Amino acid sequence: MNQATLILIKPDGLKKSLTGNILTRLSETKLEIVAAKIVRVSDELARKHYYHLKDKPFFEDLIKYIKGEFHGRRKVMALVYWGESAIEKCRALAGATNPEEAEATTIRGAYGRITTSGVYENVIHVSANEAEAEREIKLWFQPDEIIVDLYPTKEIIEKEKKVRVWA
Ligand code: UDP
Ligand code: MG
Image (cartoon, rainbow, N blue to C red):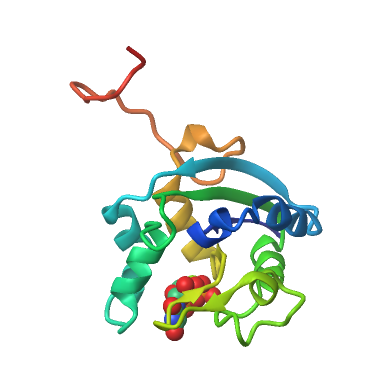
């Protein structure tokens, strides 16, 4: 069954110049990239993405981490991978959440670490299931940024919306 999954290359992955290595590993899946961009992660986006972990002791550090505060720049790379069993395939390649427990051959096992203050720097995010993928993809991408039709859309006319354009 075709599925979509959100992939984030987290700030440590970008800082360590691992983008190429990670995309090469993910290409083993033969899945299709149907959306990709570099995102400046706002506090609001970070908190919405990880809202289900808001009661965990590591939550505030996790928000700082995904916002890039530990790595000097507020950016992540966001992609949508699409194809047969996309979630399972990408989760398997990513490896366990705890990079010390992840198999050495997985992305997190190869490139992740736990900092001395206990933050898991595990390089990559992959949606855990289809419901989470839908919520996350809708959070990170607008319909027109994705080249396949994943979820129902509607057209609206937005009036008096302030947008930034080239000067
Ligand atoms: N995390 C952490 N400490 C933990 C558990 C999770 O720092 O004990 C962070 C880690 O960056 C992880 C993220 O919170 O990727 C989301 O946690 P989740 O349980 O959803 O793991 P994932 O789906 O990313 O494997
Ligand atoms: Mg998760």
